Length: 371
Image 1 (cartoon, one colour):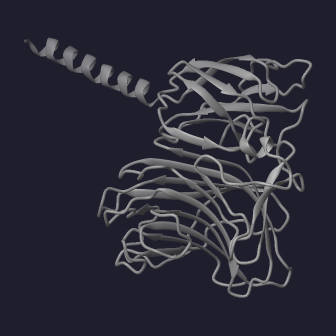
Image 2 (cartoon, rainbow, N blue to C red):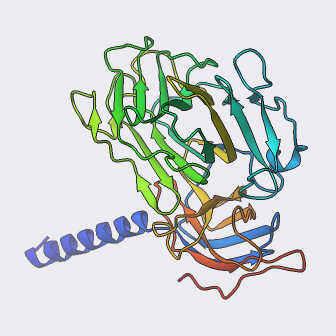
């Protein structure tokens, strides 16, 4: 091969490599939306680069979800959920229309020690796995109270005692600040147990806040896991930890597993103590997904990054170029304009596709705009 041919071959090879890299890394894009843009309506989203989503998900929100389908003033365990019924120190959790954020109902717990909502994934979550957890929450405490609200645990077993191999979120009022603890060992005081302080958890009373946890479980004994907290209310706050007991200080990269125990139970504990004399918690639209960050959301801005009100959509089928959802208006009202986003498995979002929310008299796409 002469020099000229070699140069041309190299140029073509480099060009094809760049082109393939561009195609692989392209963000998803929604080209069209067809169907009834109303509560419970079926929508077909067509587009490109949606990727695949074979994850396992659980969603109690939306008009067909457990909360809206349960009679007010009661609740009990169902499916893989274990709902506190007021036995011992676990105050009853039940459905109420008081302070409902989306639809007509929400869960409420008036904690007298704990008030748990627990979901059993049904199997151990493997190493090197994406986990996405999202929920809307609102709380009320006595104005002068200081103390601890143990909000959430992702644990290897169905227990709300501090133990090894778990991730816990503790909200301190007038104390140490907001705390995330990751215990990868079988012992709660294992050598790699780490606390982080300063993340943004709910801090304003009687105000709905969405909490998201992005988790990538580590390989056993390796600091290659990932954990990030995102809070959405009047703005979007990503976790910014001001202090840590981690000697390596490489947050958000963490050890998830250093023993043979694995995450399985998702537990909203709602413990109050350490001086906290009262705690009332409302919770809605809990979403759990194991295996991918891919999902469909509805928000209040043309891009996901600018949206501080977001509502999960119930996915019925997912292909690379077409997704079918059951439309969930969440906190949006009839007549509102909102934007649909497709987030792929890498966490990359499409531009928003604008729709207008309709009532029972019909629904459809507003104008097909994505801006």
